[in-house]
Length: 601
Image 1 (tube, one colour):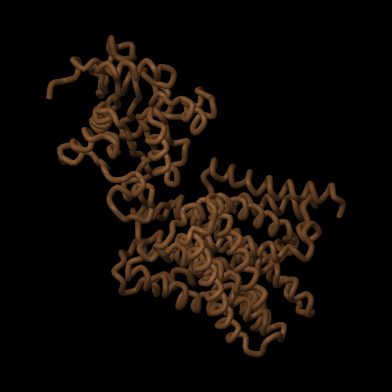
Image 2 (tube, helix red, strand yellow):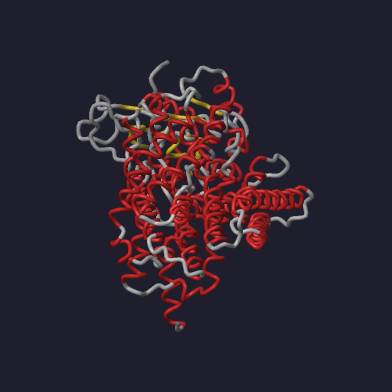
């Protein structure tokens, strides 16, 4: 292959891998729905991307390392303090009894639908036992099921990947006669992988604890260790590297000797890149004519998995554990297949070809099942969670961090207008005393911002963070702004933060990139061009309050001598963009008004 075609192929793999996820976010659909078709178009349809030509023998080792990094990220999500006893029993049943039921019924269905020998039917079923956080996580983010359902399904999706891959390795070992006792291989694969993962985690923890990791290199050293762990595991037993990566993440997430936030940030940054690259590459290798040939029996297999297997697994996994009927139905209605199924199927197809075993159905059927289950669950479960009334509402709250007393007035005005508000008051003794008095009718937090930024603390303030849509940082102190932004950076992102203060350079760099017009995409557009004027007014004794249409002039706007700040819709959400046009019934304007204009309490 010429260097020009390699450049084209690499550019398309990376470009489409990211842009399709970008578009999926805009369309609010799971990214895999766009990644797989895009990979098929540039691969078998247009012939622009041929991963095997580009990467050669390094293709599947690279895929394995990529999946290992994703499992490290998944392992970091498996924190035991988030898992109650009944939830742990559910997860254990899903990855043991559930895996056996899925494997058994899937094998029978494959025998009947494809008329292949038992070992090949077992191999196909083993490949389809897996699920994976790369597909379960995005679907859960759209469906937003109330706890404990989301945590249970995420744990299952993370743990089941290496288990299913190990089952598939046992099957391929038996078929290719590499080992007469493949189930011993499964046990050894798991044990070796877990040991390697523990050693890698201990190496990182000890090095960081003893200050032997230079500042700024911690996350990269963790990345290096997981790649080494995956490599060593794969050299000993195929798929042991996946267990090693998952175990390393799990151990790091559940130790208390050293923080691991930087590792989580790095893996969250790498995750969409790796997912995009892997799905585009694997989809580019699919034979479309074979997919058409096996479409009907593959869809019949999907029906068995979706309508029979998964509901049965969900019923068995939750029986007698106190879950509601709605929760049990939802757990039995989500089990999409993802990257591990696609990667192992593509790799094993080459292994079977090398030993002369003919199984042309495997790869096209696996990809059809992946696409179909992602479509069914990705589009169906958000609707199902609302029908079952177990969906959390979309976040609409406003967090206000400030050191001035008028931050309390703003929070009170927003509460009067029907908004969901939390006042952060760790930096002002005056605000702290008011918040701690218990006399304000909305949520407040006076603890440490460092603690608020720690997502592992299970208190009311952290639960409230999940309801926050916007953060207003009412401060001109750089250190305070940085602390408040850091506390919400993981849960919100900088685009949902507005700095209302004199430090305009931070606001421009972090939020707007120097483009003030982007304020029209926020609820703060009303004050964006008058920020200094409003701050001067507040410094001179002006305060905030909420008015409805009865106090608004007939032509709209605000009463004389006041300025508009933001608009609140009748459902308590902030209007985007803000406007001071004529209010409707139930809507409010938050205005800046002289102190003497405030109603007497």
